[in-house]
Length: 81
Image (spheres, rainbow, N blue to C red):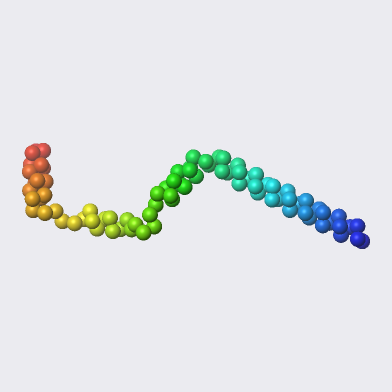
């Protein structure tokens, strides 16, 4: 019986090694296949600023125009007609 339990231990270790190798190969394949997309995503994450809230930016863009700016826009629109 000592021989069969040793054999099953070796077989289970071989199986684990094969599974680990297959996972590593699959990961490497995905990295190579999707490299352009992964590079773009990583660059975007590097440029992102977690303290920046895009909703605050919308509020800045929605501020009302001054009277002078309104007159400029009105004159530009009338010149288009």
